[in-house]
Image 1: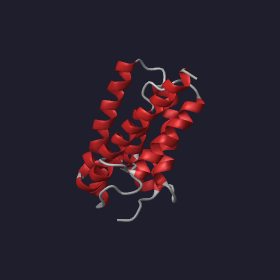
Image 2: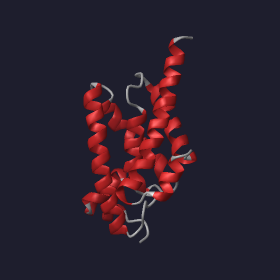
Image 3: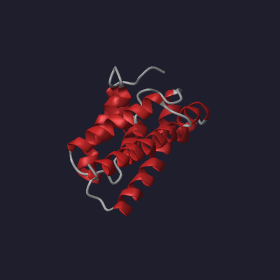
Image 4: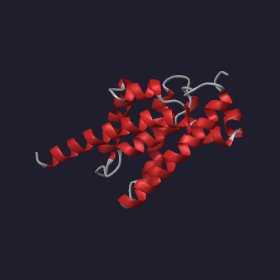
Length: 162
């Protein structure tokens, strides 16, 4: 099946989340648009959470993402359809775990996550090819988020000592 319309996305609750509230319908670079759509939610809901609540949020949204993305991809008949971007939401939120406050850090986190998500260094590339279903859709972006988190924290640590 080709990319669903906005009407079709909002008619299916699995698509609503899997397609990032419609952000995955961008005709070019849906993953980038999905990541951009994750920023306001990060700013409104996540950046001020305590770390235990933040981790709980990540675990719950990852698990729900496995379910939503699996159902959405099966409905579409396409594994990891380009418009499925919930994995980008969660990957970006992983990147921003315990990030310093401020727009500069959001931009750095965004760029780092997109680089790791696009380049897919090992084992991300292996996971992307070998693991299927909702878990396969989610896990490679979650790991890209972990890589970006590590680099972001190293940058933040280095800046403190300059």
